[in-house]
Length: 230
Ligand SMILES: [Zn+2]
Image (cartoon, rainbow, N blue to C red; front, top):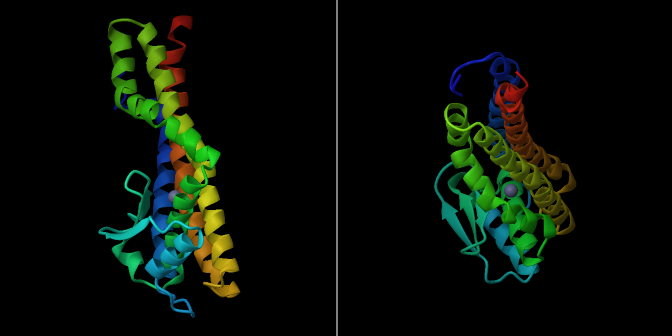
């Protein structure tokens, strides 16, 4: 009965979603690697591109740092730092420039008070609580006090809502990135496709994460949410 046991819904719902997630992860890595080997003709490094887009938007106070790891690039709104990974920072490839422009897109979203990012951030605390205590709550509910099961499932749903709210934020950052790379003539038109493919592959990982949560949510609901009907 506990969650780490394999049940019918686990097999038909969760496992396919997890496989989709693994495939999306593989795809983002392979797509990035492919376009990280193709140098852009104008030859700016990803860090230079990030700096120039930030400055263009008046974000002189946002710093750019180098961070270790592969595809660990992110924007940290608390310290106002765009962190670019080793494989991106000093690289002038189509993949590296695409990733850097995407992360800067997040910095611009914050600076412009882009509504979806605020909405998503408002959901961070409850999503954190949900991902930590929803499963223990459901287990506790099964053995001690049944209403806790539904509370746990609803909290798990909060995680899915957070992932849903993440999608427009990520898509928008990529759209901004591509528009800027085009309008600022950082990449030539035929190079834009490479950057686009990397960002689309990255977007798919967020979609897969949402699908995995929804599959798990549906499974929990089918297994435990309707127990009172029995
Ligand atoms: Zn992003």
